[in-house]
Length: 337
Image 1 (tube, rainbow, N blue to C red):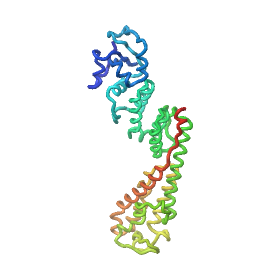
Image 2 (cartoon, helix red, strand yellow):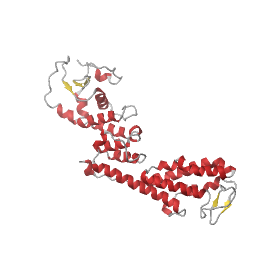
Image 3 (cartoon, one colour):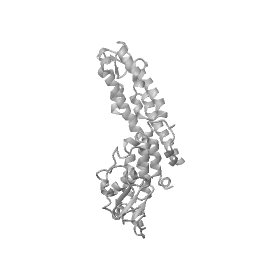
């Protein structure tokens, strides 16, 4: 009889008990699971068909009269599979130590046609623990297991990382077409993000479809925190960052020029790394903050950080919304390859 070096959990004790079940599943690391054929059959067409065939007699090393089935997976994998057969549930962050453990369960789930476990694995891939930290791997696995929602979610998360990612063997599952789709998607996201920011930087009186209330209320609301307002040509009233001297966006003097520089840097970066979070980069915004602290009035210097946070958050929302409109194209044929 095989022995289990690990103590069973409260739930797993049910199918570690030799007095229950009508078949034994013996794993590659020689752990025995005593389960019922009916439960396996209900969860797996593979086993439902297998159990219609003549069953092998008890193995010589098996003290029980139950049929014994040896499998190629580890006890860790089978404990998850059997748990899901008995009591399906949603995945949690502690279910898998790493992406390799998750893949092992998915491989076994597909092998044994356990739809409940396949769905469990699909939802687990979407956990932040995986899709946000290893999006390129999750993208590849999404293609391997034909999960369109996982593919799209992972592709969106890759935008936070350089396309020149580290290699791992799981990436071998990604087809050339899948890689091309991802590259084209990132390029389109970069172009959309760059365009939005470029328009903001070039034309303050931008087209109506790019007018977003949050931005309109933020780009020129430095005056909201300023106690020394100065009139400028047109309808704008700008703050006193120049030490009390009136200036305006037409002359390119003062904070508006710094905003332009910031938007230009952001525009350049977004083309290659289309991540809306770049709008919140303190490194990019520091010059505007320094100008307010150096040349602004007392109110400006006291509240500039609050203003910058509000402005950058609004800009983040505009960029994120624009990128979210880009759809990664996946046709059904390529998932059937």
